[in-house]
Each structure stands twice: as C-alpha cells, then as structure tokens.
Length: 306
Image 1 (cartoon, rainbow, N blue to C red):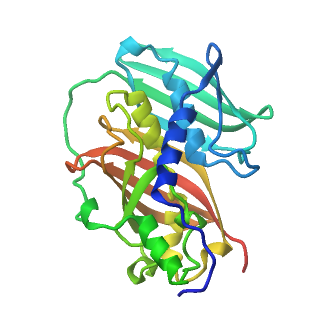
Image 2 (tube, one colour):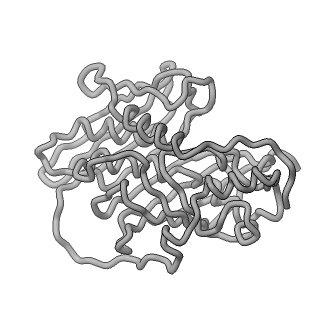
C-alpha cells in the first residue's frame, strides 16, 4: 500500500542536535527546594511528547535524593492526565514520601497553568545482591546488520512512495538513532503482527556513570513509538491517519545500570486491545544480551472514523 506524498526527512545532524537539546532539557531549573522548572523540545503550540515529561519528572525526583546515598531509581509508575502544551514551560513539584537506608520514594506532579498534566511515583534502592534470572534476548539481527530507519524512509521519499500506515514521526530525527528489525514501509513491516523490536542508541555523549541521567534518557526512549505498537495487529484494517492514540499510564522497572550511548534493543510488543485502549509491553536489552529494563503502558487507541 503506497501513495505519492511530499514528506520531509531529517538528516543525521538533526538527530544529534535533538540529543544535545534533550541533555539541556534534563538540566532542570531549580525554583526552590523540591520545585523545578523544565523547558520543552519545541516552543510551538503543539502537544508535548509524553516521554519528555516522563524523563523530566524522573530527573526532578533524582535531584531530591542525596547523591551519597547510593540509591538509584529502579521503579516508576506514571499517569498522563492532560495533554501538555509545548509552548509553555512545565513546573515539577516533588514530594519526599520516604527516605530509608535501602529504599526512598518520591512523588512528582508535572503542572501547567495550575493544573496537573502528569504524575509519577518513583522508588529508589541501593545496590544489593540477590537471586538472578532473566529472559534471554530475542533472536533478532544485530544493529550492524540493519539500516538506519531515517535512511530507509529517505529512500522511500526519494522514490515518491509513502505508506499511510507510517507514523508522521517516521521522517523526523529523534535524539536516538533507530534501526528497526521490521524496516518501516516494507512488506514484512506492513503485515499484521504484535511485536516491533528496534535497536536504539543515544546520539550525544553521556557519562554512563551518571545513572540518574542515563535512566532519565531511558525513560524518554521508552515512550518512543510505544503506544503505536497496539495498532500493529490492525495494519490491514485502518490507516494511521484514522487513529487517535495517546499514552494513558506508563510503568518502568530498571534492572541494571544502563549506557544509553551503546546500542539497546527496545523490544516492543502488544498483548491486548479493546474498549478504545491498547496494552503494550517492552524489554530493553544491552548488546551483551542482558535484560536491563521492562516497560508496560496502556494507551488510548481509538478509530476517528467508522
């Protein structure tokens, strides 16, 4: 299914610029104790990307945990309550629920115009030894064997071809390089399916020892194209333009330290859809095949035309 369409595709430099910009956005302005102010990726009056609000909320929580405690965020649960406005800055209010020797808990509310748009509960833990087991990495091609998504979309556009099931974001550079196992717009990609693995790598230099930053970047990435996974079993039924999708709630469990500057497999899948909602799950694996994080999200999945 292809059509002629004028689509602009960003270059690699645009992705690197967005990565540097994201690092700036995660350097929140301190208003006073437990109050932080965040800027946005764009100042246009458009809807805020949920991953940005999620990442900044986590970053705000991390800024209230003593650096010498050794506690790192391992679990976070959030609800998207209102659409954010990218033309207005976001105020992050942190509540210190508990500070213990092993665990600490924080609650964050993201506010615009005096109204909550998102709230997040975060649990921190010191490193401890324990029993070990984990799912193995799926048998998928390594990132070196795959083409960059933007390069492929650029070639489609140069041939005057476009698939209406592609996301409007398909031609826009993200702060992460992306190499999909199912190449966007390909025949294999267009088949109805329930999983959508993609390798990702952050495009700016970061210090992997700064796990507060690394895990905030992972939180941002965890919302990239995630809700759209719930629509993939219905590719043959409806074009992307007839779908209304939005994140409703989001949960992340972080199992081990993360280096966002290395390739991570973002293994996205969907298990259920009904009642105008869809359930998505994901696992992040590092290059060594270790499971580093697990994600679950329920999102709005509504057909706008019947």
